[in-house]
Length: 355
Image (tube, rainbow, N blue to C red):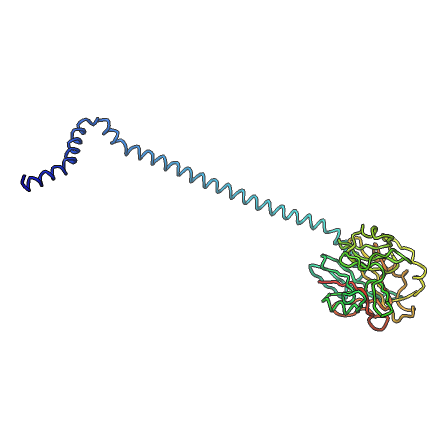
């Protein structure tokens, strides 16, 4: 076999499958039914119909979406309107609910006159009024405590046995105002200790002391409400949940009624510089300090006069704090009253107020 013959055989072997397939297609095409061509010819028509159907569905979906959007917008607008109406109704209701309190506050404030000084913040509202009575002069500090940060009872220099003036305590703490608190007792070494029961930050500093000689606990509970009175046991005082307080004597008003002043306090001294801690029925506090020109007992106010004044002002409960040379009221860095010692007295405890 020649080379050419070999090439031809290889060529035929390579082409044989393709030639066989071509022959099979030619034979098979003869038997294709006419219906197949008809179906093939109708295929573009079905595609066109399906396209039209899809276009119709898409158009409907678009319209439905637009309608849904409109409904959502309408509901949202209605929701906003309803929310605004509810907010306005709540605001109106709150304003109506606050009106009695506002009217009451305006009424008690009017009895004090026009404030000579005032300060206000998120913690506290302070208004200071001058008292110009026929027999005595002094000041009234009206206090609205808005938070637990508004008031503290502090020890002199924050240490048992130490003392400092109210002004020194105010400056040391950066307070906006301060008033002297309870009584004190000195030991043989000149150390000054708070009198009897004293509570600071909810803790009894030197234990509990039952009432003796009409001594009275005066302070605030953990709801910043004035508490006070005579207590024979710590359990009785604990029921009032005391947060801070000190001791002096006597009780002046209880539930708006005058109490009987112990004879000793009616006459010894008859008149003096005084400090009183009181409250209104809305739990705002009122501190009254009166001037005394010396310690002779011939200047200042009597406790009976202060009872009359506080009833006139609408006070509910009132307690006498330490007086005489201890009486001090500081506001805005200034000592407002005239100390009867002729100078400020270092004290064991002071109430401080913070903006």
